[in-house]
Amino acid sequence: MRRVFFLLSCLFFIFLIGSGEVYAEGLFGILKLKVDKSTISVGKETLLLIKVTRDPIVGVQWTPDPLDLATGGIQLKRTLEDLKKHNCNYISFHLALAIQYPDLARKFIDIAHRNGFLVSALWDKKFPGAKKFIEENPDVCMVDQEGNKENSFCINNPKVRKFVEKCLREIIQKCPDIDGFIPNEPTYPLWNKTYKEGKVYCYCDICKEKFKEKYKMEMPKVNLPKDRNLECWKKIVEFRKDSFTEWIDFIFSTVKKINPKINTQLIFIPHSVENTYVGDYVSESEAYGANVDDLVKLKSVENIQADPYWGNISADRVYGLVSRFIPRFSDFPHRYGKSSYFWLQGFEEGKSHVLGPGEVAEAVKATLGMGCDGVIIWLYKGFERSSKNPNYTWEDYFDEFSKAVEKYMNRPVVDALIHIKGCGIEKKLKGKFPDNKDGIYKIKIKPKKEGEIIITAYREGLRLLREAKIKVRGKY
Image (cartoon, rainbow, N blue to C red; front, side, top):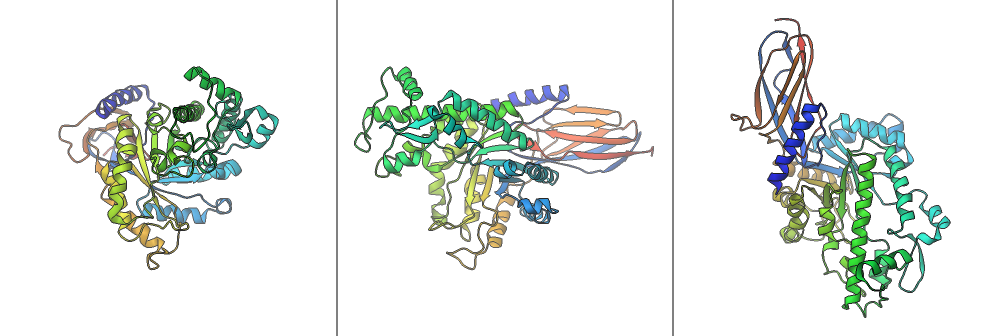
């Protein structure tokens, strides 16, 4: 399946190169380009050695300080240097920065791009003006099985869809150059009340009508946990999951409509795939309302992420966890042309501890080493010293992480599409080169005039962050 996907994508790229426009969908990794010469002469035939390699997505969650951005960006510069030093190429930042300080957010994104970083915006799923919207439109509120309204809007309501589309347009216009858009661990609304209190949503008129249309019956009133094993509850769980899938598809389709170049990235709460975490009323999986298989298959979703933090277990149990999550969040998405990233725990909260010595390397091996496309730390400088290992500092953690990802960096790309243009030259070289086994492309050129030659490379699913340039000077 993936090979077919790649061949189709190559045809797509060839068409784009011919039309003069190229944009690579999907974020399976970073494409890097190096040329052995920086200056050549007019009229002289020159053999170029062009090396093309790929890196996985390696990054952190980090939001710059608005005050620092407004006063010279010294902290930003130091942070980017530290991230580069530790093999990072990806930054996820809180979208709230762009909502509150759009000019500063655009400045940050531009600087990060110029320094070779992809930048994704992590969205907390809050809509500016939602409180006022609900107050002015009480008919959009969610309703529980007893008929009580909640101060939260129903995701099936057409009025809500119209309001949300307007909000998303305003939000994205504040940071149009982001590479990715990430709703952070979305769930069916008010899932925690279902999980902790047995309250079930949504019984508004629109949901009841949709339920009746789907199942040819009235939406049953359930009493949890007594009815948890009954068919009526299973139908409601299915209905909630279908509604949530439609909602996510609406969100991402809207994002793509506003800006087709933004990569749509979805983070799952790991427990959304398991029924082992059961409270007094229902399992977390039933309450979250996320049908992982259906969500992965959505055309509007381009990247899948999960954060099964390893902080509460020892290194020798990492692979036990991986056996449950890697196939579902890596192998399965790959079948549908989606990239997959895993988040590692770099913070401490209560009894949840950061990864300890050796565990970081094990976690990287368990993700990148088993086919995942990216690994990201939540959170950059999320702790100073480990509470379990006081001698283990953030610097130790980050150094271990950097060393662990190195073995997956600079992998040769032997089937790139090379485009050379400038100084009277235009070459479009597609497909595999027979003698290329290490990602080095040997190409002869003979510039006709002075100026600059620009070399770019393309490969399905990989993003080229920097093109190569060669200056052409007078005749030799």
